[in-house]
Length: 94
Image 1 (cartoon, rainbow, N blue to C red):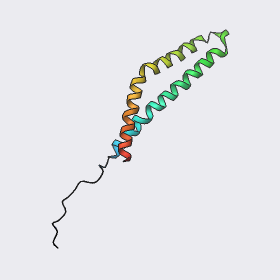
Image 2: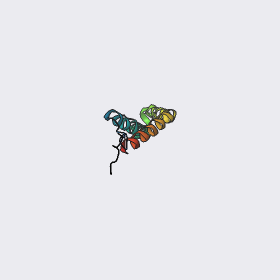
Image 3: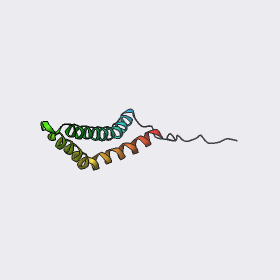
Image 4: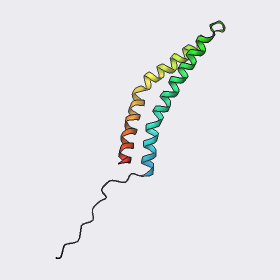
């Protein structure tokens, strides 16, 4: 039996470049790191403001509220970056 030659087929899965995988990790872990840092910083500032009310440390509480407000305002951007990074990461893992 004489079979015709097999055609050149593309690989079964697309190979993602190293740059693509690096950006996937950046977009995935940056919002996580910023959110955790903001929450911990805000809690630390609230605790410092509450610890000693005699020396006018209430400004630290306001800074803590500013940090949490910034997290609330930036949450759509952080969530969008996280979702994009997650999709890129899952494509790179396939």
